[in-house]
Length: 285
Image (cartoon, rainbow, N blue to C red; front, side, top):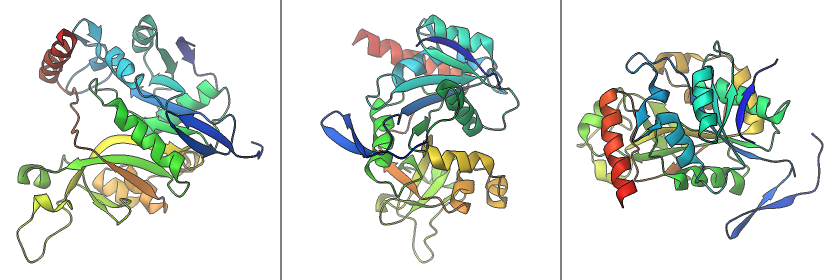
């Protein structure tokens, strides 16, 4: 189904197999779906109207939908927006957009709302919902698949996200770069804007593998996402201004996928020109 959907206001069964590529995953709901949802808002202090910025002949949001659609695990790709102009641009390029209320407090609330609208009620506890940033037209579809497969492969994880190595001390010290400390299973122990972990006795060794930066993409198990959006922000979240700390405070298990790809986001008109050059070069090749 393509077009625009507007906001208007489970029984246990035997396990079944969900086949993705050459691998079969055990699922517990035949209605189980994997959603790739792209929150997209018109307002931006640094780049108003960013989702509709034309890059290499196509709106930014349309490039993102195209890239996300290349992931092999997704049953449905949706753009969750509060703006009819964005929804129409998505529909014009054959995508599906869901109009969600503008007063929703976060992108996470927006994806939960969009999935409920798309499901015609509520999404299933076994569903997997990916929150994919709407300003990364060069996102690697393989990373989306890796996050979905993390949750499919092991029921202990409530969420999954991604990290990439920190390669400079400037990034380690920058508050705009979110650092993550991992356990032995690559589960998230803590997220912070400060440089963590602290090497008490020696110089920081960025090659140690301990220092990684968070990438803003998430996969949620349906049952946990319902609890998450019903929970008020905690003090850790309010202090660091990081939504994912609410999940840790609630006791969630967050799987972390490592990638070498740092991602290229579009935050300013200058970023748009840079990304346009990359997209045009790809098309020529």
